[in-house]
Length: 463
Image (cartoon, rainbow, N blue to C red; front, side, top):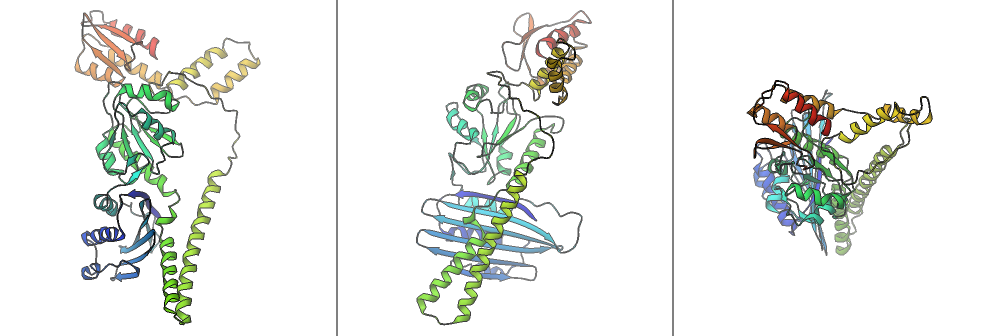
């Protein structure tokens, strides 16, 4: 079962540099049982293998004008689980790439397999070879901090026009310009899997919005943007109440998605096998060898490599067919509404507002008429999570006993998206940094119902 997969470009290097990385990785493992002396003699050409009772390493290396290919297969048996890691390297005249794939398989029936960690070889490759240029950013274990002038680069990433291979995790700023998700540990965790890009400020989000047709995440949330144009949003919620939960979910979803991505053929074991077999054929022809058995062995090896490539292609075809299979569920007409320059302040805000408007409109048209039937169908068949009603109740709870702006009240209001200023005779509350939604609260409340009245007035305008 495949448990980890990724490919990424490295800086320009030679096959020997890649081989040295693999040696460092193997020798540095505290769990290896391979003879260290033999690891010092890793090859630079052809086939090679070293083994112990529970572990083995195989290598395939080929080099010809303009192209170098190398692949290592590390197999280790640990507590009846066989772990296989394949590391492929490919260099041509324009770039260098590596691919890493780890799978695990049990020799006995089990209810579940242990979770697979990210192979340490990824860190070793990035440290010793360096991340190469992928589109407009180098592969790195550090976040890319955008500058205020980088709206063009950000738009290309989010629109799928940046010519990158790795997905991008875009971290937006909250309405008060804070980062709600720590990009440093996230970038380390996703090194070699995705680029982590950080928005410079809230104003950047506003300027970027029209260039990406409002597809950019905002308000402190994070978005995953694939080179194909697909995107997904992650934000603080009941399911992910802390930024650690968001980071864990992001890493899990990205790793899972990359398992289903077709590997780059140039970095696969089967491609290396085919190239080494071809090298052997060429060597036999140049020496004038008449050994039929040797020809047959090399020919069989090449056929096996081609069959592996064919099986990989057929697996990919079956996967794509499964994804493209039409749903058997009845489908209704889809309606798309443009929102212009307005952005959601809360996930699901627009849906709830439209849902409430449909309910009101359905009660104001001809009873049992066509308009009422259509409005009722739209209301009933579109889910509504009611985030605004929940936030309205949270606002009432925050201001129910209001008499002064104490620490608990400040925390509750800021959680709801209000920034608070105490200039002047009253507190000034600005909702989501939008100057259209400014409210005043007295610095000392005498009326015991004053807080609830203020919550009601504020709620009517924004919820």
